Image 1 (cartoon, one colour):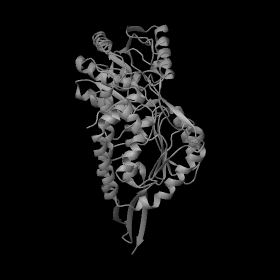
Image 2 (tube, helix red, strand yellow):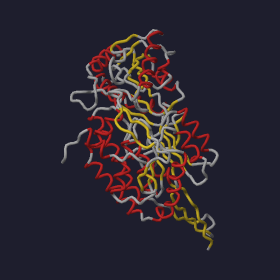
Image 3 (cartoon, helix red, strand yellow):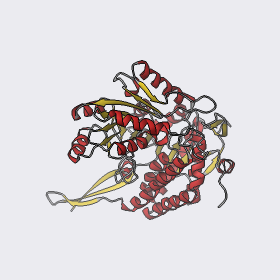
Image 4 (spheres, one colour):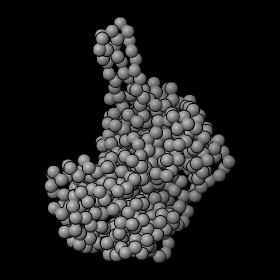
Length: 487
């Protein structure tokens, strides 16, 4: 196999818009820069779509919808399976691409390739299991037939933090269900989606089923599509404020929506927990993707009897991590995605310290090129610190203490968000009762990662609506039709 280099992967990626099966420049000829967050330098440029380009992409999706909906489930499944296998073959290429444009280490990127490609394999198996039901009415006079049909053209807006997985998690069930798509990847990390679209063309996805629009003017280009009566579904992963705005726009056409929004994940460590295992779980829950994940542990609540031991061990492990460019050997933590993100993390830490938090390790941005922030552990974090309410989206672990189970649950639930929570305890009864009491869509018990293609991913409250993955994931792309047949 040819050696994978920065130059080779950047050269291989299409830089245009994919509309109706054809790669083309933006109609106005504009381009947008894609930066390397480890250096701040420009990696390459891609097409910067106009409003007209967005409309053309929806035109193509609408034109392809009827034929794609009629395509045999097995044929749709085989495309997904072939794509899964080809992504796996090209794992090193996708990993290098994600590391360059997003900043995570190559090891983390390879993990995302394995995770992201699995959505294609999972939904290839679900495509042939779309069913319905047949029943007799209570009075016996009518036969009740329930069938599932594709929702129709879908607009997908994906985030920058998991450039492959956040795409496959939406594209997989849409292909399986028979929906066409317009995908708008994040402007910071468009290259992975462009490479994925090219791969799907290679494995035989028909023209117009998947259309990709890269743009620096997301609101201007996407809003006309959301308000277009031909669009039937909107799915978005990103911040809650943007999600609220998109839902308002989607209400005009009564669109089906799936929203995976912000998080403020509590990490609860009870007095009977294995401290070493809890710290290991904390490192996974906090440091996956440099903390730039909606599932990242945002607030650590540790029973007062073990808080000092837990904090010391967490600080030791966080302090031992090596910062650097994700392509370099021996690097554990890459840069944050951009200056704005690093400035936010710095401001949150400064606010907490001003209000009384103590810096156990880290606590500062690294000088020099790139958007690096030191892995940080804070203790004695007051309840009024801004980072207890806002997503940190960086490598910062704020630790507070609790005394009773009831206090721990109350502190955990004291947020508008409800995506994921983590619980560490060796008491089975406590694990169940606390999990039931937590107001979150997902709970990880004695584990620091909950994401799994075979499980329904999603939250409650301000963390969104709908589920991605699992048996439930494909339902988001299907409408239920009832046919009553009189005898």
